[in-house]
View 1 (cartoon, rainbow over the protein chains, first blue to last red):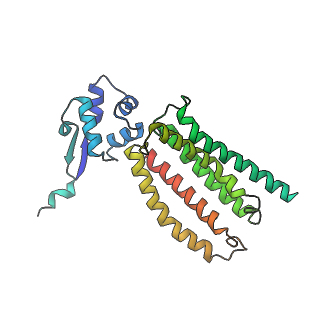
View 2: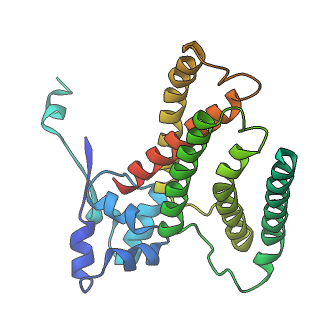
View 3: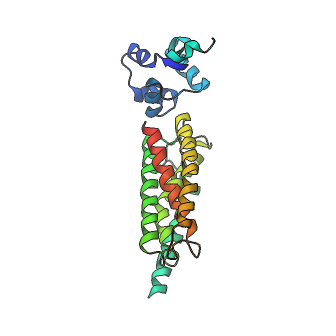
Length: 76
Length: 163
């Protein structure tokens, strides 16, 4: 299982907001936003909630669990 | 002559340390420093300085093993990083918190610490096993260990952070 994210789309919907501006708004570095968008870093619950509050959306709309091909056979 | 060089280097190091201590104590009370977090630029600069200090330290250790302790060359090599960490302390005191890194910076440093630990064991084993010419004798193992770990830790942190 992996964490899927719509963070990039949310940024674009909020007037093509830059990664730098978003990072400043939620109090992290730009590299953190870049890593979350690329799926290389899983944010803490606190940061996920901060991002959700900033965009005025539920957390589930920004972050979702996505299953890898190998995960489908896990329950068998 | 040698004693004069040693005394001069020691004096400069002590003056720098006293100035750094005064800076950590006084700067947060002024408006000269406004940062309340270790930003991206400061973090990257610290990593790069760590790599340079680590490489410089190993270089002087291998180039002048007999002078490293006598002339305080390893302290000189480590001083830029010490001054940068003193600035981190200024930022921490300004923020009135030790929590001045963001969660990815913390995670990157944790991962880099694990990598450094794993690499330092074989690296030091190798350093002790290799036929040395007094390189690790007389307390030189400590700067050797310090600069190997500093180099690996700083380079790995930078790689993780930029990934």
